[in-house]
Every structure is written in structure tokens, then in C-alpha cells.
Length: 376
Image 1 (tube, rainbow, N blue to C red):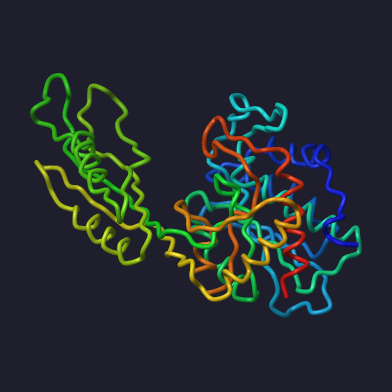
Image 2 (cartoon, rainbow, N blue to C red):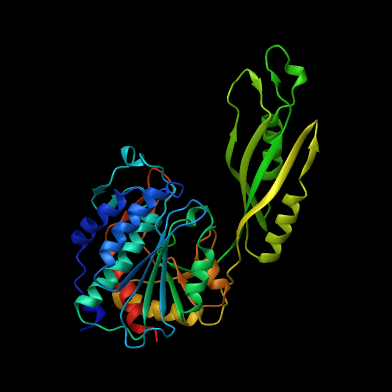
């Protein structure tokens, strides 16, 4: 029996995916993420040795499953995915799980529960068919990718170092293609410290942390150029409108195609720290994803195998570098052949229009099954 003949059923896959989507798992809610890991552990329980790894730094735990294999312990294939989403608990009220023709909606369905589910279903179908993969397979699901993987980067890198290949079922690119390289990303914490006063009676005595932060945000985003981008996506300040704010906190992100451009961007950001009109502005560096160059040895030969499998399945698979970080940044930068974005097709990730193309569920499950059977 060939992986081409595995009986992936679209309706069955949609039904199996639904509990995953309806188990909301925002990154900052460790209990919610752990409930999602419970569901995934249940789906994987019959396939191999299930291990729950406790979380740290306030994040949820991870799930690792090693499938039985005659060469267990030798370098094999790591399937690396994250189960956290950007959608807070309650998003289902605005973005309920629903199917409309070939589209299926829900929080985190594209990024990246749909792809993770395809990987699990590929393993389940291979096991049911009694098909042994040439290499040992390990699955690692982590809880904090959406905030830069601060608590599990070491775990991912350690697991990747034990393996020959890494598959990352992040969402497919807009044309359905895979990712063979990713841009470098740095995060920054911004803080302004001003002087409080009564905004009505003593306005002139105060020094507004909010006003200074607003000016700095405009300055930061104006630094964006063709080589390096800058954006501010989070801001917190103030409790009373009649008080001049004494503190404001924000978070910024910078992305570049080359590591040297990111390093230059980091230096420019850190140089912004200082004092202005009696308000101190502080910039500290947060988590960073290294650039993953597309010409890493082994990556393109791995992609060619995937492209051949896709042709057998009836579609063309392209490859490119991409913006937007993933845990593939880490494994690719380590020099381990990594194929990213082999997950579901769809649109609207990180929005209230997040959806997938339903027919990409069996397509991507077969693609992953084919890779597991062809990689040696």
C-alpha cells in the first residue's frame, strides 16, 4: 500500500479538527493551552510514548511523542508545531467554528491547529495501514510561539539536534507553497517614565508618559525602510483620565531579511533610549528569531522530495523565504534541513476572518505522510 492510497476522509477530518478549534488556547492562558495539549495527547496516545513537559515562565506545557521504530534513538524526523494562538478565550463568540462550503472558520484553525491536525492524522493513517517510516519520528507541540518562543526555544533546538529533518506544518503561503527560509525578527520592550499631576488643576506640573510614547511610536515606525521594518503592536498606560500618566509600556517588533540588517536595526532601536522633556524613554531587547537562510545544505533537496510528492498528488508546490517568524527560524538557522509551511491553505490568520480551505486537509495530510515515507 502506498501513502497515496491512505483513506483520508475530508468530513471525518473536519469533525476531528473541531474539538481542537473549540478548545481556545491563547498563549498567555497557560491553563487553556494545557487543555489543548490534553486533546492532542489523547489523539496521539495510541501512536507512541506520550510525554508531557511542564511549562515555565508562566506559559503552558509542551507535548512530546516518540513513535516506536526499529532505529529508535537514531536521528530521524521532528514534526514541530505550536498549539498557542493569538485569540483570547471568548473569540468563539465572534468567530465560531463553522463550515461554509469549502471554507471552515475558527480561531487558530489556520495558525496552526489545522496543520498540526494534518500531521497527527498522517501518523494515524500510516499506523493503521501498518506502514513503517524509514526514519524514527518525533512530534513536539509547544505553547508559546506567538510571543517569540521565550520558554521553549532551548527545548526545540535540543530536540531538533537529535534529528535529521524538521517538518513545520505552519500555514501554507498564499499560493499554497512551502517556506525554506525566514527573515530575522527582534522584539523590544518600550517604557516611558514621566511625572504625575492632576490633569485639570495642575496640568503644567506633569510630564506625560503617554504623550512621549506617542511621539516615540511615530519615530520608531518612521524608521522602516526596504531592509528593516519597525512596528509597535502593544501599548498599555493610564487608569484615570484626570491624571497625567507617569508610566507607559509598549512592545515593538523589527524584521529584516538579513541578519546584519536586523543587527543594525537593533542598534538603532537601543540608541533611542534617553530623556526628553523630563520623561525617560527606555528600550530593552526582547526575544529574537535568527535569520534562516534559504541556501542551508539539505533544505532544497528536501523540498524537491516534497515537490515530487505534490506532483503525484496533483498540485504544484513552490518554495520561498518568508516574513513572519516561526520555530523553523531556530531549526533552519541550526543548519538542520527544515521544511516549513507545509500546513493547510487558508487566509485571515490572526484575524476574526481566519479560515482554511477544507480540501487542503487531506491534501496536506497526504503530503506529510509522503514526506514521512520518503525521507531517508
